[in-house]
Amino acid sequence: MSEQKETMRALYTVLLTDGREICHGYNVSSDYEEACKFIDGMTKTLSDALMKRNPPTLFLHNPSILYNVDNVIGVRVDFIGPKKLEELTKRLNERAGFVKD
Image 1 (cartoon, rainbow, N blue to C red):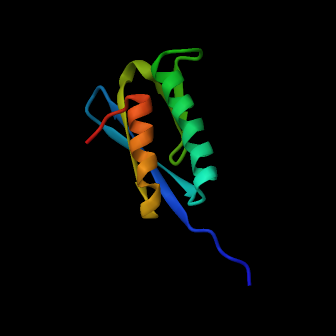
Image 2: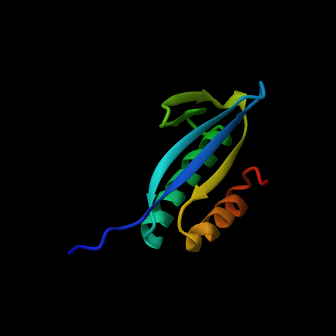
Image 3: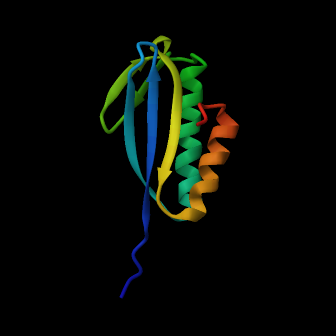
């Protein structure tokens, strides 16, 4: 019998200048290394967009939306899943300087 990997849910909430908040959800493996790769990739994507590197847009899935970063004031990151991966939320928020609750 094969061992089934647990997954967690990464929630990226985009905070807009008009006060709206739009949540994007991603399934993430609970495997620490795989989760780190996913988070590092998302951190780079978000950081590059918010620092207005080329192109100065941000595209996120689930739902699929292309943002003009001039309308984005922040991104809140939350994880729903295994307790051991909570430290990833802290790492991401500290490293990227995203919105903290």
